[in-house]
Length: 452
Image 1 (cartoon, rainbow, N blue to C red):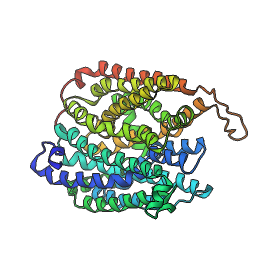
Image 2 (tube, one colour):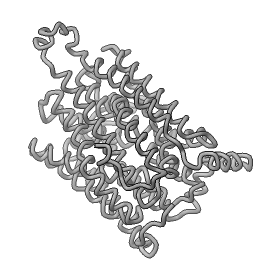
Image 3 (tube, rainbow, N blue to C red):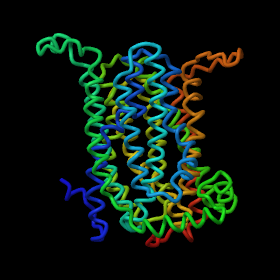
Image 4 (cartoon, rainbow, N blue to C red):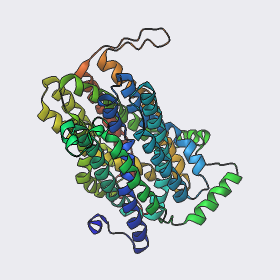
């Protein structure tokens, strides 16, 4: 199995890849436990949390990305492997604490706080890992290598989420047969504990990864710090956006395409409850398992495509799949067709397959190596900015809720499933922005990317 997942890499990269793919697969069990979709279903069905709690959990993933520039500064001049390893242990601690959260208002508060904290730690891991990937894998095979790692991670995340759902669907009489009736309604805690143990093994394996060019890169970063250039500060990121017009346009298009996808996360969970009476397993299949398992099949295809073209050209094709997914979701809820609903999640999974690679690697086609961390920090931070408001706006449009912020009424329009058509229209806008950028830059972005 490992041989099938191993891309054609230089000999010097193969050892690192072997350690990384084993680590990623094991660590993914812990990452699944702080996944916003898994926790959204858990908050809804086990903790009986309200819609705004579910929305906060959905927003926490992107919200945590606002801390990216802080992580970039913290990582500046440090060993990325050791730093990422430390953050992995922090995520595992969050998983253990989630397993102990009580069914009460205090437990709901713990659920929200630990979700945000876990996603913040994962943001730091992402910042560290992208530098490791750039150093360890050449440009013309980086997309495929990253795709293989993504395949391993997504498969385990899907399996872990499904295990949580299946355990919660076990009937009390079946648990009574084996003397475990006390687990009824609490079975997710056992899965979380097991996932934490597996993730610990993954963190241990990751410590064996080597960062190629480590000494030279750390020395260069420390010299830049001594000269007053301390990594990805807000000022440095602002200078890059002012200087690099094409990257600024790329980020604008990314912002417009990504906002509807973030807005859809909480309202999909709410719409499932409003339009379909589903058990844990089907809810988890639709909310998390299918959208993350389908990329296992399509990431290699997207990876080969990305290896052959600039990220702008790639996005000009790939973005339209998100448009189709949002439109199908709207149709499925309006017609209350479970078949169309499943089809919409498959299409969304196809879109996520390419989106994962573009999100992790796209900035490298704009940045010089010494500025890669700053470019990634810009990208992740802007994802966080849209994550602060997009899920809340989505819930406000969908549910006609009146949060009464600061004593002022903010009653929403209550569009229901029509909200997904609004999101599809915004996705069209974002996709067209990528097309426009590619048309204006195709004399540079049409060519195969240079090796790096």
